[in-house]
Amino acid sequence: MILGMSLSTFTTLHVIISLIAIVSGIIVLFGMFGGQRMIGMTALFLLTTILTSVTGFMFPSHGFTPAQGVGIISLVVLAAAVLGLYIFHLGGAWRWIYVVCAVLALYFNCFVLVVQSFQKLPFLSALAPTQSEPPFQIAQGIVLVLFIIAGVVAVRRFHPGPAAA
Image 1 (cartoon, rainbow, N blue to C red):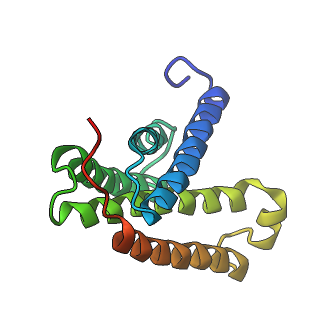
Image 2: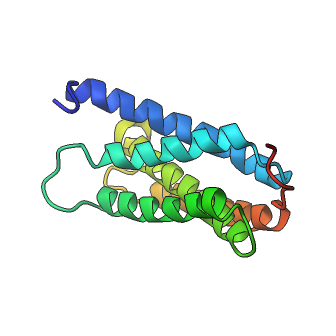
């Protein structure tokens, strides 16, 4: 039992939160391309991404895992994004720090999505059963390159005006 739920129910909740984080993050990323602040969607993205990392630590494990490492890094990156957006209001360098951290947090979510997809989906698992095979590496490489490009575009284009009252 985790938080009064069966492991299966908790896993489903964690996956739903993660998918909401990814979808809202993609929407926020496209908003950044247009210089839009997207206040509500950004709050949803940051909250669900934080919850994804936090709930990830609640799964039973034996020793330190790579998933926990990603979770720790993600939470540090998210802390910087939250500081940049809500404490420093994107002033000065905090604009690009926020953008880089938000895009990096979304990348981590998508990285884990690819890992989980290759572990859980039989047709992908058959292509890369140990996740060291070329199909897995190519998929992760494509995701990484897309996020590097998206991050550069977002930093260049995200110059929103003052937040609405």
